[in-house]
Image 1 (cartoon, helix red, strand yellow):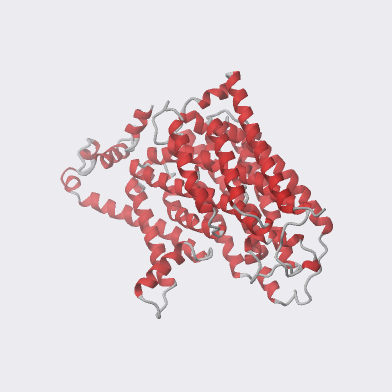
Image 2: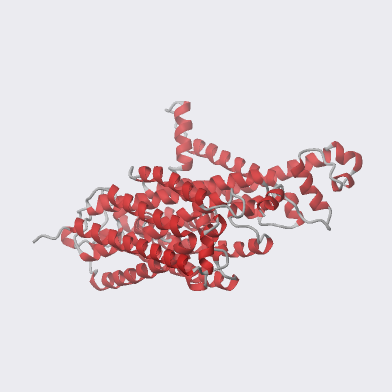
Length: 555
């Protein structure tokens, strides 16, 4: 009797996803019945989104790992390793761990300075103001929607292109299951299931790696030492050298604007647990991403990847082909390949519930303290439904990530300078500088893309539209675009700060009565700027941003 690998793949993958969902639902039910301290988090939007100070070191560690991984790890690292060589492979893996450390380091400072913050948007509100908060909320929402889209797209593409089945059953199944237990149990249950998903995935990945080490004996191509593949995989690959700059910057920027990661900062029971969890989670992420990238690298090294013909999302699975099948597109036809799909399904569910909890956190930041979690739950449903539809369109995952990586890199300098929380820093980087930096950076990147891709034989409008697409979605992670994004963000802050300083010096108030009137609150302009100058010039006053009133209202 012939084995139906399609049926086996679907049955095992959906079974493991149902198992994690059932465990989450049962855990939540028992938690409610026991009236434990964790059960109280389910009653308010704040507790539902933050689980503040309740999670130990190992839970935080596995949650960082599960939230950082996903089905994208099956496709993107092998793809990038083939495209950029061993330098890009190593750079990608290490860069996946750096953001967690950065978030934890910065998060500890934010918690100490603004203990009432429940989200990244809250911090931006307290530091800058409501307009900056709205900008960051829009970016974080877009960033997490893109992450959710990438996860659903990846799992759908794997089943469509590798299993040879329709994409919508697995996409719909995982979307419904993850949404169900996320809306029922909130962040606490997401972190609890992260432990199971992480340990389950790690065990299978180690087993697959050992199997591959023992069975892969494909010989190198005769011309490998001086052929095209050597140039592709060697240290001289321009894309690999570019990755040394692009990967740390882009991944750190995109992670900083993901509430899914920041939620672990609020949930940790203390700084020691947070730092331990970040170290373990980041280390595990680096190792696992490296192993996935190495599989694609080995497949290309052994001549099993045809860059012109093979699907980039399936480079990892090429390593499981035998030399007799060389040249054929990989299809699931062995138990070891089914195991890889099961790993993808487990990590996929964990990444999706993390993104959905991040969206809950965004919605919660708009609500006063003590609100019901009904609105955040409804918000997640409204967002998830269209994302499922878009996921079935089969977009390239790396291209999807590129859009949000570019956007986050443009905002990254303003955010980092915002952490400069001293009297001088608050004077140099106000809300005006924050917003000006973002506008200046995004405008510069767009103009640079148009100029970089300009073709004399095209109409002006065609050049403009193509250049805009090239800048944000088609530059293939070229280092100069990310350098322009980050550099222009810094320049935007400097130009805006200089202009505002000159304007203050030349203002009628300054010329007539100097800084005394500023301390008395008579600065011309809006109240927000007056409050800011008051706090800077009066050392005995407590710094008050335009969001202070909002903070007191929420309290």
